[in-house]
Image (tube, rainbow, N blue to C red; front, side, top):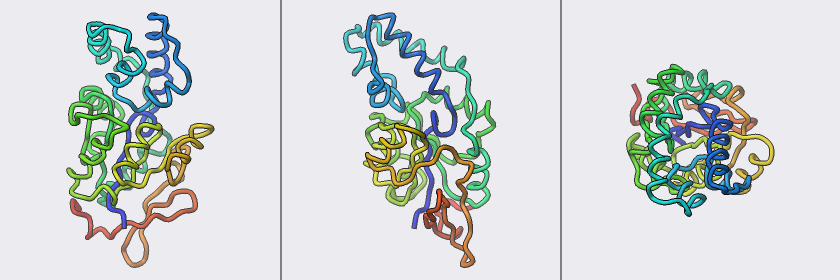
Length: 236
């Protein structure tokens, strides 16, 4: 049975893809760099900015990389943010049932704190893993493995919600079950690399209790088994 649920932030809890796309598109244009849709899917969405700079902006100097990284904390708070439909109710549902949860994101801690506070999500996630907590970002599994360790569960007993190729790859490498939060062509790509279920948002996703007091996560028509409240290592 599964024991914990781990979430990415951008594209899973909140929608910021338009702002992310605009930032990197403008940056590339200013340096006469052409970015393809595949570049965004594989090296921007869900990836740490240092990875993006190393892979796609390698011709820039170290000083230019450092300036971009220094500018990001100032720019990110200005990006419009709203929650993915249904996710707040889902998080409250998990908290009520004492299901261990964690956030695993490539964003900086300051940005994460601001988003969680602004959208009243603070306190709904037991563990938060940000850019500063890991050495290797997605698609490396370190973030998800670290989150599982801090929740005191095995990574293979975790369900991961992700929207990007890099994040889904990280979750799968960690040994978790991955559920894609996507639509269209990207949804098909996530399924192709190993996401076991795909949802457009969280409106129809809930944790429910069986008569024997065990739980199951309802995703589309599937029922993913979870342990009882008493089996959770961090139950309240």
